[in-house]
Image 1 (tube, protein in one colour):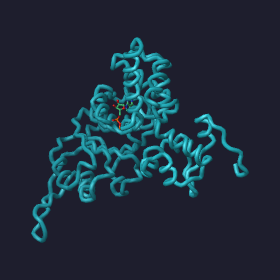
Image 2 (tube, protein in one colour):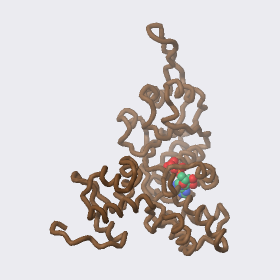
Image 3 (cartoon, rainbow, N blue to C red):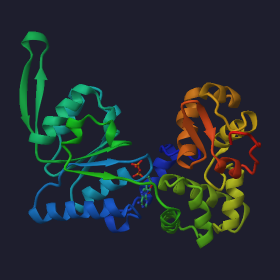
Image 4 (cartoon, helix red, strand yellow):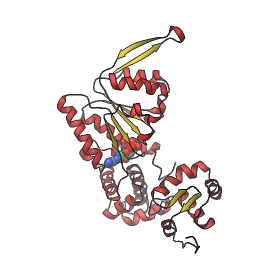
Length: 334
Ligand code: ADP
């Protein structure tokens, strides 16, 4: 696991429960989704109805699980949390659906990774609050219809486009989660520091925010590492100085690049003159698997405008040269 990875690791899971905002007002940023969701939930409450199914799309660590818990809290409903990969058979889904209580929120993370038969069962459950449970096999198999209480499905996916249209269409509301601005992350960090009873200065929070890749989960994780450093090496206060030193130790630079990201960029610039160079060649040069370079390092480099994927290969942008403090070689086509 990487310090700047967006997926939750074991320590995150233990630490995050205490840091989750409990209601919409406490949820930092995402003003568009927040406002839209506020209307959806208020209207449902006013009608005394169960809220419409909600689809949340966005990168890991942006607050989809948190929002689903907030939806349940705002609707005064219990919540059940599961994920697409955990539902291998339609029967797994039937078991969950048939045990829901009226108005319950079912959070289905990575909904795009559910099996096909489960997905088809979900269509009917979402639309008619009904499932057909198949009993037996072959010609003797019978479908037993089962009524479900009204419930709210909150589906989460990294990209709404990954979902088959019939599934996407069954959601009443889709919220697109954006990466957070450094100001918003500063707010997240100061809020978390308060809950962790850690003193943090304004510029200490700002320094961590700038390195957190637009992602609250990473911001909270870096805050914990800087707090450790501040406790061991200083007076426990998360200052800018402590953040700078700690994140130097952990090799997270001022834009949130880690050692792997910088190795890829450095090879691209120093060995291949900024490209274009093929992915396989670049991967060999940094001693990593192709997939690691392509799926772990590149997405953030592309998002940062440091690297471009072109038909002829990977190319560094002028910002990449600048970020690593290197001067691009003079060349006729540059
Ligand atoms: P996802 O489900 O999208 O992977 P989570 O909801 O698990 O993300 O959020 C990861 C962590 O980041 C949570 O522990 C939560 O404390 C924090 N977090 C996410 N979004 C926000 C936010 N808008 N305001 C404050 N903290 C947030």
